[in-house]
Image 1: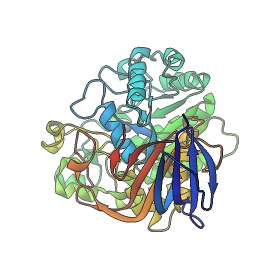
Image 2 (image 1 turned 90 degrees about the vertical axis):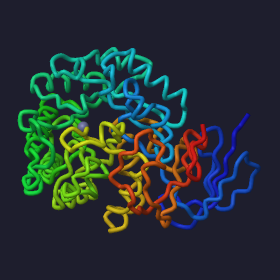
Image 3 (image 1 turned 120 degrees about the vertical axis):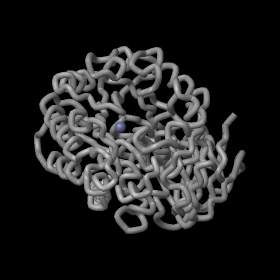
Length: 434
Ligand SMILES: [Zn+2]
């Protein structure tokens, strides 16, 4: 039977007069003024903005291994409520997703839950140890069809191993997502290296630890012709290196990059609070860095937003700073933070939000059915957003099992009204629909 959903009065990309969108069999069947047909469900959007469903290249779902912090199911609910239709689940689970068995488990469980496309990321090296390459080809050929590889949480530090990984990923038609951190420069690092960390006696994580790896990897991507994706860019210097790289001709290879919502909004001034909820890796940087990252996202130097959604159980977060694990929740607050840092100040319009939260990440990961235009004949992966609605973040009310959000109590603009995956409503008015 044909399932029909009629979206009344939506504004694609926030532009022009409201139109109706008819969704049939998972596809956008018609876009036009006043469509009047029988439908299984009618959503009265009252002028809400329609965007292609968001794609997150960087999500930690914690299953297998840390189901006390998040599961594929709870993370999928959070993703759908946040407007996402596709997420990439990082490989640093327990066991590590460095083989076909684990990636197929994650992929299958994501399909069973069915709220969002869960794409497992494959580890680059066995056990994330940085010593020898994982079974990348086997993971690529598995039913999970892995195309994004990353040792995230750790850096692929050995330059020869990184070179081989770029060559191998390229041969598989994939992309290598690097957590850029020279481990020799960040031994015992607890916070951004600067006056704030020094005053509190915390060992610093210096900006060049990220920048030196990004520069090296750009050169290796060019030399090998591989595809490098830089995870969670956090410094002005990294943005400068990316801008230099992208301005060149005939460099060979492809380089893309992501920034997290928290690096766009928060700074190391928060160290004052001594609250480990603000501990993240790479650490929160200075206001000058955050401003530079906003500019880099606006001008395309940084391609996309990725959440680095990192749930942690209370015992791993509610402890002294040095013992706390780095990471923050991100799926349900991403849109609000991007709206407040980029849309409200006029750095991006809503078409720009579609570009950085959906189209560009879909292109980087080579997803054919995500980040597509809102037009007849396209897959109905959509999110409806009320830009005026402001809401207050409450960690306990978020869908994740963990509640570690640095945005607790903050009022954010931009509320997700409805998320639709292949024509099926997965979230509506704050509730997921399984
Ligand atoms: Zn990372």
